[in-house]
Length: 288
Image 1 (tube, rainbow, N blue to C red):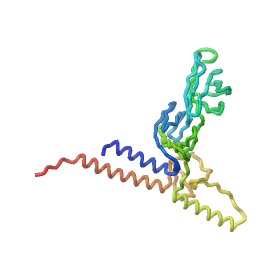
Image 2: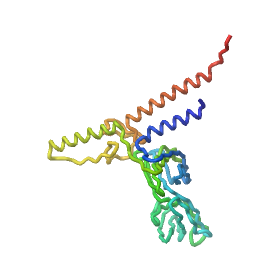
Image 3: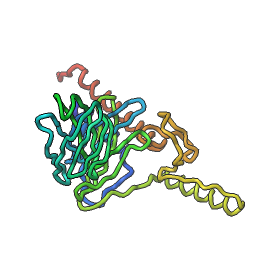
């Protein structure tokens, strides 16, 4: 067994544990990619532009079905080809860090490093210099059909692009790039699958709530999401405690149950690695 095979086995097992909450009722394909800030890549055919990413706290800003353009004094118009359609983009004015961008007849004022809506698209100006009309204008921008902000407490999003449903999962960040798993469901759609542990927690909570409503005229409304965690949770801390689960929720929404599975998987792989390197380093034996 080669080292590379073991490495990718670790990645696949870890990702499957984290992303086991959705299933496709059609033909599903998966792809992974690590995308730098200011770059566009197309894992599984979906173009993603990473606008910003941080590692503490872990988060990422991105555009999906994205394209890029450079607008200058001499070339202030261009056409961006997206999966959904082609769009004409034009620079109308640039003063300081404020630009006026026109797309298909709609024009909006956009500040550098801000996302704005123009003609039902999302536009982000990465950088701008000079003036327009005037001297040495240069603008680097991204255009996409949708903007997403993903973080450790909300790390997945399902979007339909050109008739195909994609599940976008933010895996990790080093502050300069972000790792994604992109799952595409052809001829079907994704549905959320609850863990047995989470089903038990939700049923218990429902029973307690029903009992409280019966025994008392005073009631308070509690909103609980699919993972059994109150919607009012904040994202200021990297580790949170959830009374609903009776335990800790870690990065990526990992419950104690999934965390145990992940630890067991890692331990098994460590044992495999130990025997592999032990066998590789042992002296050869000779028969008499």
